Image (cartoon, rainbow, N blue to C red; front, side):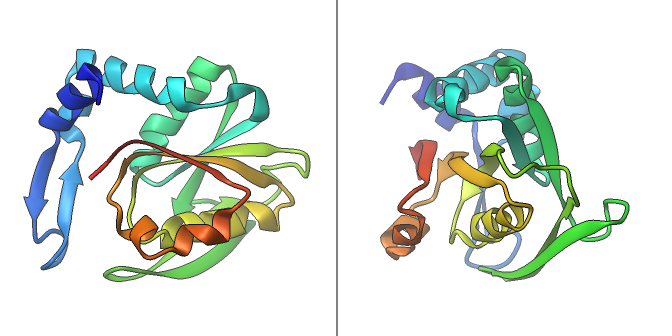
Amino acid sequence: MSEAITKLQQAVNRVQDFPIEGILFEDLTPVLADAQLLTLLLDELVNLVHAQEITKVVGIESRGFIFGAALADRLGLGFVAMRKAGKLPPPVDTISYSLEYGTATLELSQGILQTNDKVLLVDDVLATGGTAQAAIELINKQGASVSQLLVVIDIGFFADKGARANWSELEVYSLWRS
């Protein structure tokens, strides 16, 4: 593991039993609050991406906005915010899904993506894959396709369950596996 990744990992605040008992929340707020660490994180994320294959960056609310918008700027691409229910003006495409600790709904402005768009989907953490799968379905509903999924942390649960086999065409990248 690189010195940069080790430095980033050490800055993460780990909170046991949040948001519910049994969940270890990996809080990237200390990384975001430090200009040098944030630059380091973005440098590492950009290095993982195959930019020539992407036409848009989609960030999942809320930490996916932070990383996704910054990456879109660095890559010279447009950024699209995938929001939680009720945050975007109509018309929107909507999908509801299950999380490891409840249910959620994501929305995407209708017509924001084109049929030829190849999307880099960005979020902070990959856990069970439920949010990412819902986001992929919502993007596909608009005729676009997700070519790459980029997260900062892969907590390993998803890969351990073998569910990633459903994404055989998708490149999945993370800075580290927790």
